[in-house]
Image (tube, rainbow, N blue to C red; front, side, top):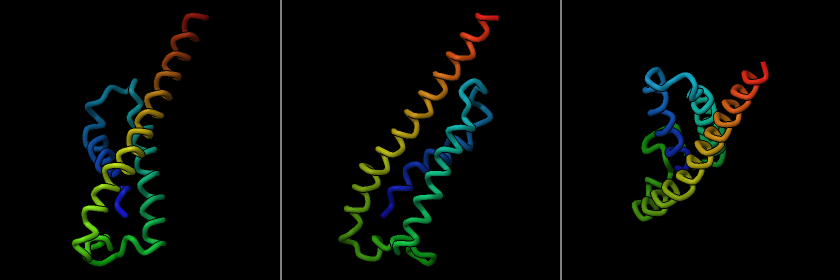
Length: 107
């Protein structure tokens, strides 16, 4: 229902503060991963009718009884997806940093 909101919120924050983050952290990689995932999930949710292009946008918000379920999905599924994306990005940055460091030692 709303699982894409967690990575979207993270993407908004990293996009706003991207110029204050050191280039070595390759924040653009994280932004691409976050926004790509958000776009794919948003399209999938639109295709399945869970997100509509009119208010209240999330069909779960039409019935107040569905709101707690939506918030739980946002926290569990969306949070897990966001953590997985950030963890994968951290691994990619660490590996490339290590490879760069090793290649400089060889020269």
